[in-house]
Length: 103
Figure 1 (cartoon, one colour):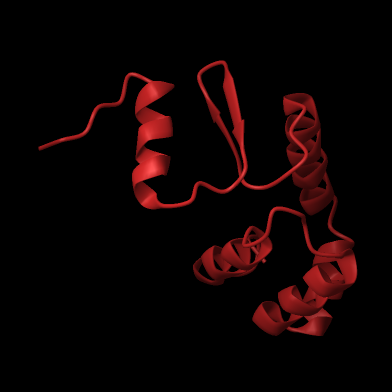
Figure 2 (figure 1 turned 30 degrees about the vertical axis):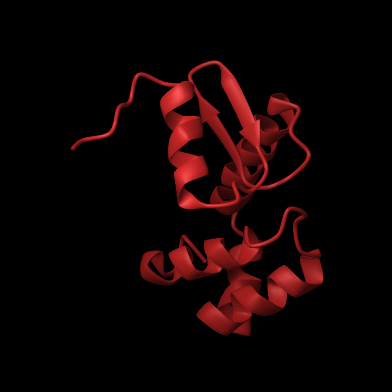
């Protein structure tokens, strides 16, 4: 979806990450086709550039040791799982980085 429609990718990404386990390839393919069309999806699946990007992302995720979504890499820390609310997310970021809130 990203290589075809950057604007639609945000919504597709949010759908992919809404649970702690990734959707099946079949479900993800159906959802991607909703955004870019089935014929275009078939073309993109054959693209070497898309496969190169996927291999890189898979290698990075596998290297984190994480087994669930979302996974954040902040400095040398790897944080997996969905925070219960925005306050918890901000706290995690503050504790694991030099980022501080702006008043």
